[in-house]
Image (cartoon, rainbow, N blue to C red):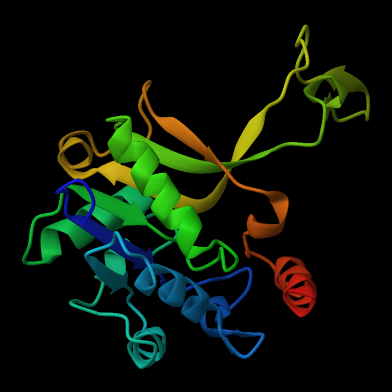
Length: 222
């Protein structure tokens, strides 16, 4: 709890990953990938409850071994490629037996996000009375150097007339959302949403074998 606000964390981990099968329970360092997120969340001083949303029994078993609560099994229709994070999150909030002021979405594919990242994003959201906070990373590429290619291989500028300044992209590590607003609109981002900036070394998002191998490299340097 923080500022008398009850806060729920949801860790989504479906079993049907196609680009990297079984990625959520692949061993990174000395523990399954999902364990990194579970441990970071359970070490938070602000989260009141940490739950898993999964359709996969093997993932559920591993999550329980690391102390994560699993109050339900995610319906198969919410574990397909077409189901959105918003669909999953709405189901998770509805399925539990308590109400929370804020919900924090923590994807297990971001293993190097820390407990401090989670708590800082929560404080940012609540202290500023923001509808949501999303973690981002500063891009290193200049948008003026980006091109689109036509079928003949000719280049056209993707961002014409852009004046270069620092720009950011979502890294998928932390989402903090005001629950009532989310349930009403089924949206994470609003005009008044804030960005929590994270460094590159904690912003790895594992989706492919190359991503996982890069994470292994970084883990060995930790």
